[in-house]
Image (cartoon, rainbow, N blue to C red; front, side):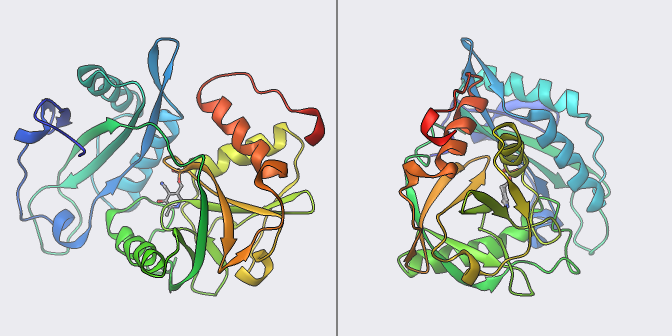
Length: 297
Ligand code: PMP
């Protein structure tokens, strides 16, 4: 359950009970997916709570609204302040935060006239990190970059994610690997992808993906640890049977892949560089020092 009778959200300029919040049924946001949103994590730090890269997330929210021509006046600083207030009112430290910018009533396929934001949050302790995912190449392709602003986090794009993710689950897999319209690996339904071969990390370049904040963090970790990382176009065939692979995203964090289309990754996860990156990511979000173990150095 995402909320109960005590849950507080920020909505239409006020802090209100989630169970009592009301919206209209006549907007393009509901009918056509014309809304933008974010997914942010906060972690328990120093007896309080801290959003990981909250500024980057709210900057991206404002970028998403701008390219979608949704008027949105809030500054990143104000959004951060409101979010901390929502966390405080709910007494959450380990949480997932979901701000969404919705448009006022209008269904005429015109650009937004007015918008309002809902900031919702629920408690979240990550169970993903310890899992290993079996993934399949999806029969669905990512939205075409000529048809959508794929670098924006737009609600309507996620209908494609639902199709891909559910197809994978119906076929006994945990997640989908979704290709771009040219047949190159793009991302999963809700995370970016990396694979590892012979000590080098590879990830899809910007252009046909949501360029994740976690992806940027992982690239930063690779630089810090002197792990070579290359952004390049690649096919599922190139990735199949590689040493290791992982998805990364704000909610998923860094999650190991066990196989792609039933072809196992070669290395023991714990022996891979990807595992080192996963551990370093965990330390980074929790603001703990990370020490590289000697056998992987
Ligand atoms: N790709 C898609 C399609 C996503 O939904 C997400 C999650 N926001 C990501 C990648 C990863 O982005 P981030 O690391 O910014 O959460």
